[in-house]
Amino acid sequence: MSIPRPEYPRPQFQRDAWSNLNGPWQFQLDPGDSGEERGWPTEKSWQEAQTIQVPFCPESKLSGIHHEDFMPVVWYAREVQLPEEWAGNTVLLHFGAVDYEATVWVDGEEVYRHRGGHTPFTCELTRQAQANQRHRIVLRARDPREGAQPRGKQSSRYAPYSCWYTRTTGIWQTVWMEPVAAAHFQTPRITPDFGTATFQIQLPLSQNAPGHQITASLKAGDRLLHEVSAPASLDFSPALSLTIPKEAVRPWSTEDPFLYDLEFTLKDAEGRLLDRMQSYAGLRSIAIEGQVIRLNGRPVFQRLVLDQGFWPDSVMTAPDEAALIADIELSIAAGFNGARLHQKVFEPRFLYHADRLGYLVWGEFPDWGSQFQGPYQDHFGGGATYITQWLEAVLRDYSHPSIIGWCPLNEQRQEGSSHLQQLDDVQRGMFLAAKAMDPTRPVLDASGWSHRVRESDIYDSHDYLGGKDYEAAWKTFCEHHEKLAEGEAYTNPVAGTHPGTLPYRGQPYFVSEIGGFRWLHPGDPHAEAQPGWGYGVGSDDIENFYERFERLLTELLNNRGMFGYCYTQLTDIPPEMNGIFTFDRTSKFDLARLKAIQTKIAAIERDNPVITS
Image (tube, rainbow, N blue to C red; front, side, top):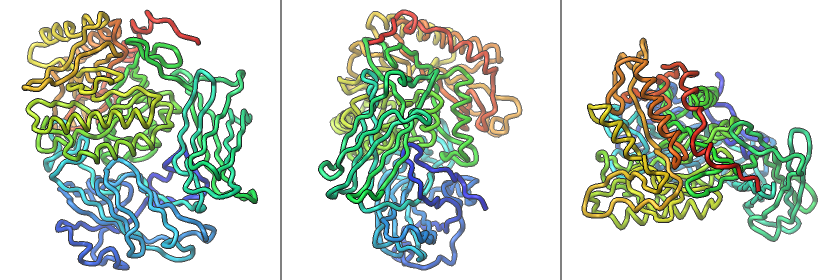
């Protein structure tokens, strides 16, 4: 049987030796959370276990389990034998994502605990991992129905409803191992400096030792452009600078997403290789001038689509790598040049394809599920864990050139909150965490509704055409944004005794959720089973849809104060039937026609010159 999702899961920092642990694992439900008491971590086999196909969650069809009810606790187990050539090494056991609280045992010994359903963790095994021996890995995942945790768009009810979709429990991204020396690289950080045509490289190490040396090399194809070495014994996180020769400078852009190849090596005092990583980087800059966001000095209107990253048979895990590529290519074919990666930390291989295809993305966090008792309840019941998990996500994805901004929170509505101080503290904490971790990108404190951080680099609103009277809704929409270029911005109204949002102060502004027009594709089995809903008054024929789509997006493209928009959404996700594509990725519209509408020159592109120095 072939291994599902066999590709290396972290393509920007790749080692040669590794082992993919996807495929069949033993699986058990534990509704009473009594598995540890019953000795499951130490049992050599589970007689009553089912078989699950990792990395697909047990709610999905591709997992082989397809259990859609709540699963407060689940267990996984698998035996592995390490290759003989790994003898004497430390073994890193990686989990791409486990929803939500994970505990890992190896040969009955607890080796790691992690909280967070969307961020990775690594168990460093030295004593527990011996070559030519079989080792039993056991993982328990707790995913309680109640309580505040970052769930994103996972349903609080048995079935999906409104804009809440199928849940994900347990392992849902690749599990893998790799051997390393005691001294090895941790997560590198690559920072492009467009003005000097350099890459600043930070190479944090697990430990230092006398005589160790690191080397970083930069290539374009087969041509070596620059190589630099430095002692690795004096600094815990050495920094190197790689310079691109003038004749080899090729900026990364949506039209030409050129990627340079990088290699990092760590050697001991005798010159023996301890660690090597293959990597890549894109040379690009992001700058803000008034209401304009510039990419490499050029004003680029951001024609974004809301991408939720769900699939019919595999839920939040892409069924295969081709599905990741297809979603980006379908979006580009419809005229979008990027996406809000909405309420989910997308896997690194998606970001890799965004990097190589020139697709602009905003990195976001799945905070919306903290409203689990119903829409628009108090946020941040998790407090510090939100900031912790957000930092894990930003650290993991820092080096991807396709990410052009960070947004930790979605639709903060603070009216009637009994925890306003806590909400403000966590919202500001997540903003400051992103700025401290990454000073090179703009940060939006929250997408839509309550803006509570005065220093937020970006300002936005969500503005759907609601109500039963489309023309009245259209008139109101236009009034909301007609004076933006003069510094008067629409802010989502927030009721209550406390001020819901801080005033607009002239930042770059976009409407980060618009449209969402419902349209059912003839013959779509998902639409036939559940006609679902969209935002506002639905179109009565397809020409009416095209007219509304063009009217809406042209209005924003022509707004001199608008740097972008985000259309809801890329695909249907039942019961939300407002995608450009059906849930199984069949096109509902003439993509060439949608692209012609979106690729008109925007006012902010036409009216602002390119800065070359």
